[in-house]
Image 1 (cartoon, rainbow, N blue to C red):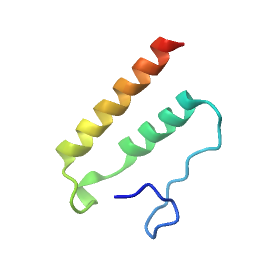
Image 2 (image 1 turned 180 degrees about the vertical axis):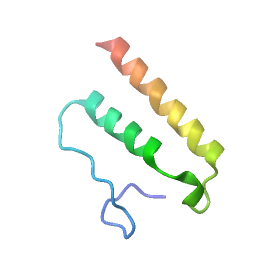
Image 3 (image 1 turned 30 degrees about the vertical axis):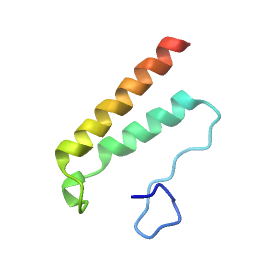
Image 4 (image 1 turned 120 degrees about the horizontal axis):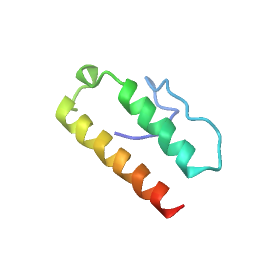
Length: 65
């Protein structure tokens, strides 16, 4: 699965920002808003694990500031 926003079916656009924390927050919000049961080839458990990793990354990023 690619993150290329030019692919058909891609509707979420991330805000333009230089702040990695803001970008990560936007990715987490979009990830949480996705109905993963509707995405072929991705289980809800896999998506939950990805979300958990994203949240951990945000926590680590905030700790570095």
